[in-house]
Image (cartoon, rainbow, N blue to C red; front, side, top):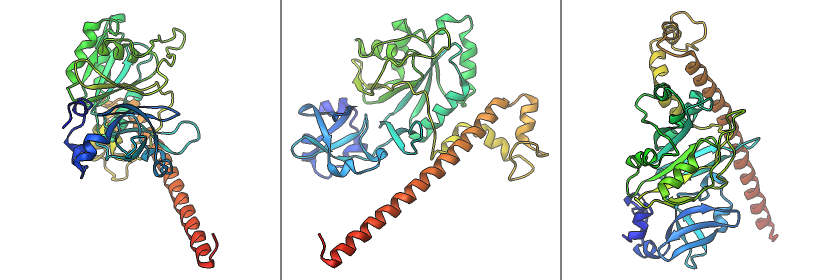
Length: 351
C-alpha cells in the first residue's frame, strides 16, 4: 500500500472494497475538506479540488461525500465517482425546519467531546453528544478545558464521568501545550479524531497546539452568557506531525437527533437496567407503583435530571424519526410517479 495513503488512514477495511489494484494507486483518495465549489481530495498525485458526479449530486445528503470519506475518482481525476463504505459516520438532523440527515464527518475513530469547566458545562449536552457518538460507531473521550481556572476541576471530572460509565475524561489547560499534548495518547498513527463541542471552548486551540502551527483562529467564551463565537467556519481534516489526523467541527448551536434508538439506550444503560426491575413492563417512570427507576431517584442512586434528559431524547428521536420516515415515503411515492409517467410516455412514443 502507498505510504501516503496509509498516513491518511487507509486501512484494510477500505482496501478490501477495491477489486482493481490499479484504482488504489491512481484514483483512491480521502476527502480533506468540503467547499461550496467542490471537495479537496488527497490522493497519490497530490491534492485535487474535484466535483461530484451527476449520480452523487442526485443522492440524498447523507449519501454524498463528507470530510473523512474515502472516495474513488473518475479517470480524469476531476470528479468523485464512488464513496467507499464508511466504518463510522458522525451525523445530525439538519438545523431549523430541515428533516434531512446531514453527514458531519466520516470514518472517525475517536470523538473528542470538548466542554469547559464553567457555566458552559452541561451534562445533558454531553449525553446528547455521547448518543450521537455511539450511533456513529466512534470512541468518545470527554475533554474538559479551562481546568486551571477553577478551584476544584475534579468536581467537573466526576460530573462528566457520570454521563456514561467508563467514558474517559481528560481535564486540561488549553493554553498549556504540555497539558494538551497528553491527548496524543488517544491518537495513533492511522487514526482519525474529530473535535466537537460548543464554540469558544478551546477546540481550535487544541487543534493548533497538536498540529504545531496555526490552522484555525481562536476565540473566547463571552463573559455575559458563556457562549462562544464561531471561530471555525468549515470542516477540514489535518495531518498531525506526530501521526494521525484531526478535524475541528464548527460549533453547533442546535444538535438534533434522529434514528438513534439503540444509541440512546447505550448511553442511558443504567436507566434501562433499572427499568427491567419495574413492576410493570410498560412502566413510564412517572407515578407507577413499583417503579425501580423512581425508587433509585428517591434514594439518590439516580439523578432526576438524567431521567428527564433520557425521556427528552427519546421523544425528540421518535418525533424526528417519524418525520424522516414520512419524508422518505413521500420521496418513494414521487419517484414511483415519475417512473410511471416516463413509462407511459415511452409507450405512447413521446420523447
